[in-house]
Image 1 (spheres, one colour):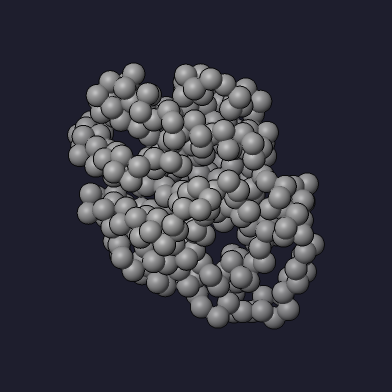
Image 2: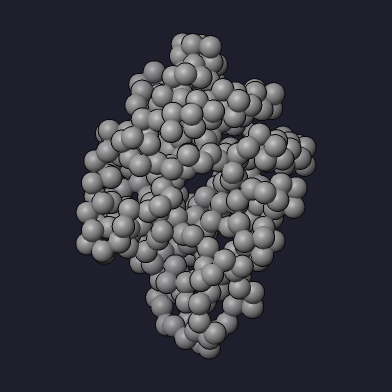
Amino acid sequence: MKFGLIIRGQYPQGDDMQLRLREDLEAAKLAEELGYELIAKGSHYSSHPFQYIQQIPYLCQVALVAPKLRVVPGVVLLPLHSPLHVAEELASLDVMSGGKLVFGAGIGYREVEFRAFGTTLKQAGHRFEECLTAVKRLWTEDFVTMQASYFALENANCTVLPVQKPMPPIWIGANINVGIRRAARMADAWFVNPHNKLATIAEQMEVYKRELDACRKPFPAEFPMAREVFIGRTRAEAVERARPSLELKYKAYREWGQDKVMPSSDHFDLDFAELVDDRFLIGSPAEVAEQILDLRRRFGVTTLIAGVHWVGMPKSLALEQMQLLAEEVFPAVRSAG
């Protein structure tokens, strides 16, 4: 079992972002020291009420300060970007990290972002597939000519190529069935989101496996899942201590419309106890270790990417959670075989 950390880097308006960036880089260095294997960083634009350091600049610095870690843009919102820009940016990051990039890709869901980049949610699926196809070609062909719905490549080439050949692994994040089938067709793995309930994921796994079979592809050797994680001496204590920050975060997600592009049964308009149930990994170290083992048994998860640092959480608490996971949970999971 491999373990990673997702650094959201979301902070309230008016906060000192130079200080917060230093703290987030310190978290990456600590993750390397504690034996985590990768750092993921999400992406949003116009993210009021939060400030937000963008993923590629952050991960470039991670590659310098914590060079053993794999780096995962989790996820690049492909419908918002031109493929040549994505291909060159990510190839540069693969070079900077010594060939440790994982290309996380997704569609997004926020209309404010789509409008700002001159598109709509309705166009997103088609644009995503065009962009990803073009990026793959730019990484594997000397020159590319491709006419798409929103870009044209005419004898274009990628001026820097990834270290990993033929390309870095590609994980597609998806909440609903159409995206999950796309992940089976176009990526090395479906990157399971931290939001859907486990009962929903169990149903979606069947969709994923059927599409893999239809494409004559095996189940991925590396199968990643993100989850929110919080550890306490007891489950009750963990829920109580996690609540202020985690509740604020999912209130913002609800206002942004995140759960409107998820299965209706997984909506966030719930009291906190219901929100947590069957969704997050919360409890004592032994309970969280067993929850992780259950993910491996039920879904074949090989790489767990933990979210332990949320809006408003003190730095000391986030670092405490990182350490508890590394010292009390990871060994228990690994010793279970």
